[in-house]
Amino acid sequence: MKCLVTGGTGFIGSNIALHLQDEGHQVIITGNESEQYLSTFKGKHLHPSFIGIDWDAIGKVDVLFHQAALNDTRNLDRNEMLRANVESAKKLFQYVIDQGCKRIVFASSTAVYGRHPAPYKENATPFDLNTPYAESKKLVEDYAAKLAKEHPEVKLIGLRYCNVYGPRENHKGKRATMIYQFAQQMLQGNPRMFEFGEQRRDYVYVKDVVSANMLAARAKESCVVNCGSGMPTTFNDIVKHLNAVLNLNRKPEYMQNPFKGNYQDHTECDMSCARDLIGFVPKFDILAGIKDYYKSGFLVPLKQ
Image (cartoon, rainbow, N blue to C red; front, side, top):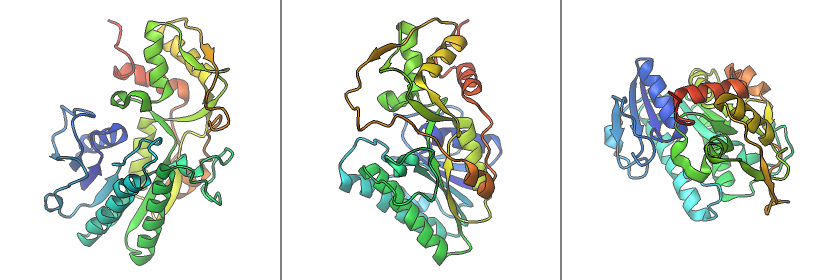
């Protein structure tokens, strides 16, 4: 099978690309090496990333895994966000369909729920598109739904990622998950968090996200589903699990939250549609995910 993974040097895209390669598929990626340098990747790497892509170098693909995006949720430049995330996706989807592609899996986000109370359900209306990033993701979903009606032979599946963590997020800096950031802090001292650490996040391990993408590529109908664990975890519990895995005894240090009133205290996905429509049931609970993350060597340097 010939697969195109946009954003193939990013966090989730790199994990998808390497998994596909391990499965024996022909893989093309877009991306740049300022993200993840994939020393073991043997497929075709198109530069200079998704923007400015060499379309002629792609040709017909069997499956498109579209992961590339401007994913800085704090970027308020709406025109730039829509250009990077919406217009580029439209051009890409139409191109691969014209070339004969029948399977498109694309990254969406639970950002489309905005300030809706958890747990998030796919049929939540009206959507709370309170940032240009959230708006861009919903517009791509809407365009995919339009294409699905125009091309019933093509299956387009959107995955609304929640808080994805795991190997190869280390290039993201302050955009990396708090699991990664707390681990880095705990190597030096106590982790710092907003009062009083009871904020809950639905963390989903990247290996589960890769599995969701593989299942989506075989889905029988076009749809958009949540991609989380369905099990929110508090920041305090994350520190507890990291202490156990890293053999530390750090204590949280609390500080006032300057974003109070405009800060998500609780993210959680209802995962029933993902189970029913694409057969996705997450395998990793938070402790198992953190343990596997540690064994990968990407969370912190492994002790010799």
